[in-house]
Length: 84
Image 1: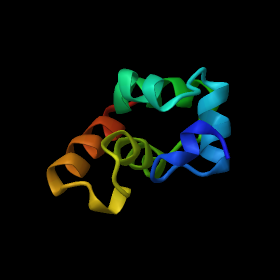
Image 2 (image 1 turned 180 degrees about the vertical axis):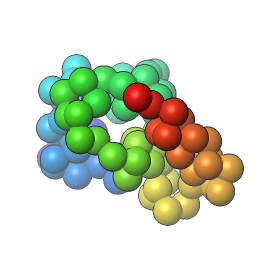
Image 3 (image 1 turned 135 degrees about the vertical axis):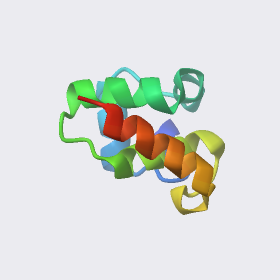
Image 4 (image 1 turned 90 degrees about the vertical axis):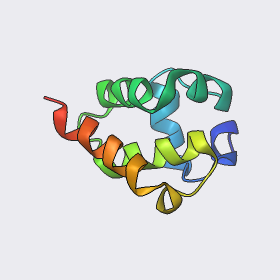
């Protein structure tokens, strides 16, 4: 198990993709924030969906993505839908 898998929502595949995007520690993920981390993820995985964004957002907050507040989910969804 890699360092990122110690965070909620991060499984082996998402960790592999985040590592490929240059994000290899929880500290690096938290420092980037969900939006910037997702931009990097999209660069290596153009098919990355809003579920991965929610997973990253939850991981940064230390909660399962299901436990993000309605406002947090709305904010992440608005960001996702604004992407080209």
